[in-house]
Image (cartoon, rainbow, N blue to C red; front, side):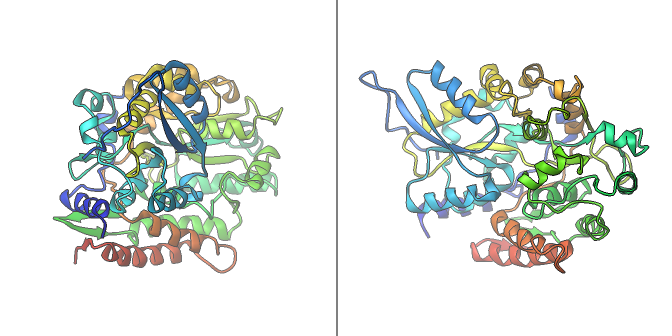
Length: 448
C-alpha cells in the first residue's frame, strides 16, 4: 500500500464522523499534510496550475481569475460530471501520476478519493480565518481525520422546478407539498395530456435517490469507534425506492438519462412538466431550455415535496476544490480555490454567465449570487429565497461513505435495467452488499 493511500486510510479511521455530518438546521438558519509549493513565480513568469471540472460557469471563473492575477494562472480542462466519467478520469490520472493540480469533487466522493490517497492534506494551507468564511457544516464535509482535504464551493438544497402553465391546464393550482400530492398531480397531468409526465427518474444517476433517502431520514453510513456501519438497505430508503418504482411501473415519470438530449427535448415539448433538482438546477434548466422561445417565464420553483408536508431536504450534489496528490503547486491551487469560493468576483463570474444558480458555501456570498442571477426565465421569482429556506430544512443526520464509487456503480447498474425487469430495490440491496465488501477490501473496519 502506497504512503498516500496509507495516509488516506488512516484519515478515514481517525474520526467517528469521518464521512462528515450533514448541514445542521441551526447553523444553516444563520445563512447568511499539505503539499508544499515548490514552484514559485519568478523571472516575471507566473505559476501555471492545471484544473479539471465540469460545473456550469467554471470557464468564466477561470477567465476572471486569470485576468485579475499575475502570479498564478489556471489552465482549465472541462471533463464529464463526476459520476458520468469524470471521477474515473481523475482516478486513472492519479494512478498514472499525471492528475491535475486541482479538481472539483462532490462532498459525497471526497472520502472515497481520500481513502484512495488521491488528494493532498491541505490543512497547513487553510487558515482559521479562511475556514470561518464557509458554513461550518461545509467545513465538516471537507474535514476528515481532523485534516482539511478540500475547500467547499457550494451547498445543494433540493428544490422542485415546474411548468406553471401545464400544471394550471391540468387543474393543479399549487405545486405538491407531499409525495402523495406529487403522485396525484402526476396522474392529473397525464390525464390532461397523455404525453405529459410530471418528472424523470434518471437511470444513470444515483444522487437523486440518495437525496430523497437523506430527506426521508435514512442514514446510509455511520461509524462506531473506527468501524463503519452501512445502512443503505434501510426502511427509509426502501420506502423511497418502492415509491419511485411504483411511479416508473405506472408510467407516471420518464426514464431518460440525466440532462440528455431526450430529457431536454421532452422539456422543450412540454412532455415533461417538472424537474426535481437542487439549487444548482435552476441554471441547468435555464441553460437547457435557452433555445426554447416559449419556455421563458413559464417555469417556477417550489420546495421539494416531503412525506408529511413539513419542510425537509437532503443535499443533491454540492462540490469542493481538492488538490491532487501529484501536485507540486498546492499553494497556488489553494489560492485559486480560495478566490473562486470566497470572493464576490469569483461568485459573480460563475453566476453572471447565466448557466449557474449554485448556492455558495460562503454565506456572505448568497446575496451576491442572488443579485447576479437573472430570474427572467422564472418570471422574476426570487428563487434564492426558496433555496435559503430549503437549506434550513436539510436533515442533519447524513454521512457519506468511503467507497461511494462502488456504491454508485452498483446502483447505476441496477437502474439501467429499469423497464427491463430490473428494480430500484434490487439496486439498493446490491449496493448494500458491494459497499460492505469494498470497505473491507480497502482495509477499513465494519461494525458488527
